[in-house]
Length: 293
Image (cartoon, rainbow, N blue to C red; front, side, top):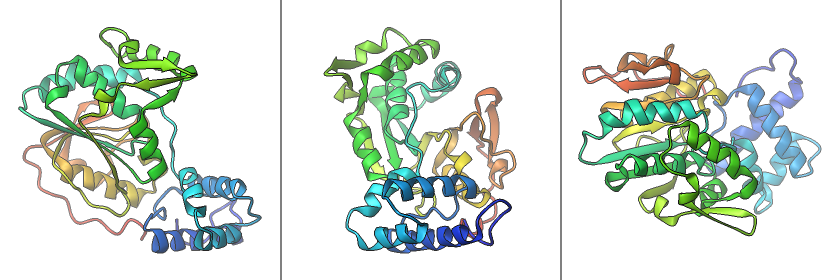
């Protein structure tokens, strides 16, 4: 988020937002400058209200000088709401079309980028278990929010959300019942610890960090829509660098890499469900510009 105010924006607020994001990037190492401007302004306003600040400048003062203020504001700057087996047809496509290819590898690595509170991680762990691939798979669940990672690792969700999770699982072609994978008590459902026995939870920013492992599947859904174009391209570069040749990339229903410099490195595998496959013979594209430029 940079430059002059856009149409409909308060110029002073736009300036305050830019200075606040610069300060957060330098002080805490979390770079939100490449996020979509309208989306980030909405989130900054929510953080301002949550911390009881009259202006974004006042929020910057709190974040920089008050212990714990940034930790309270940070979850509001990223999307932390999802569902298990969200968009069931995506998981059915993984089950029926992608996993038969992955099953040919002796060992597998899966990266859930922007894992939020873990719903997608547990969906994939259950899917891989049902298809007999769990025992040879390592799952990397990454996010920039320490609080989200703690919740993801706990694997506990309000019981009122389970009905929707269960229906999504059924529509995804789930084998058996979702209830086989959790214990319900005291108004919450705790998912089996065994589902995260092969999971690694880690702080990782698509805006500032680099690729960290070779993986066979990257699932990053409904995250890129909140990024500006340069940051989208940076994230897609990381996915390309992380994927083994012939590996798969799953994006959200409103996301694409068709217009990215990284597009040449992929072929469309399942167009309807936004699944691409890393080409075996693709040359690397030119180095990208900095995400916040």
